Image (cartoon, rainbow over all chains, first blue to last red; front, top):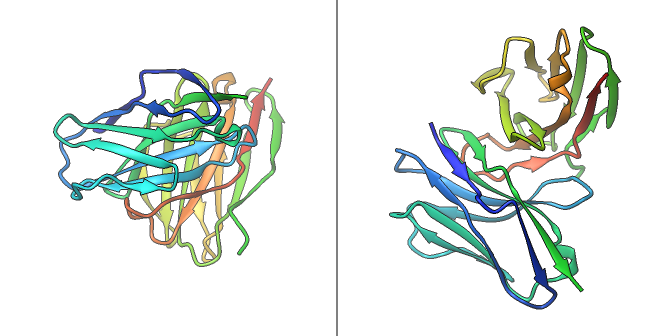
Length: 112
Length: 114
């Protein structure tokens, strides 16, 4: 069975600064995908970024990028130039065998 | 394109009752997954349906059941409700439910058990 661990329950960052959210996972699978989802206070969960485990190159989506370390089973999310709208709960998720396993999430607050 | 629609948004029930939650996926999406979200346990996978068949199931008791209709709409049923069932229930849809496809979530149904 897969496990996803987000050890930091909450973080705070000043607007325009950079913040990194940590995530580790455990699996015996070789083929899998990793995701970061964002859940703003309005509740609807949306996909932030996706990483294919077979790709060496780290995924990037505008201000969001990941640091994927496959051997260490680590998948952190870096948010650059933080904006007030980035305030949300962020979930790391592992996808394999048509199933997603989520971490417990981290609450990120962006301070003006 | 309309997003994932969950009804109702809020529900209050008492212990022992049963409840049915509904989820309409994005048009063209054939996979529907259900999750239970609580502050203590986070997001836990309940089950996934594809073309009216349950393909995956999480570690929940048999009181939790679901089904999917031919138009891909899905319902989730919880019988003999317990206080611990109070949670936000999220539904997500994707084209085929494979692990690489992003899931599109609804706003959820907030279930409170008194």
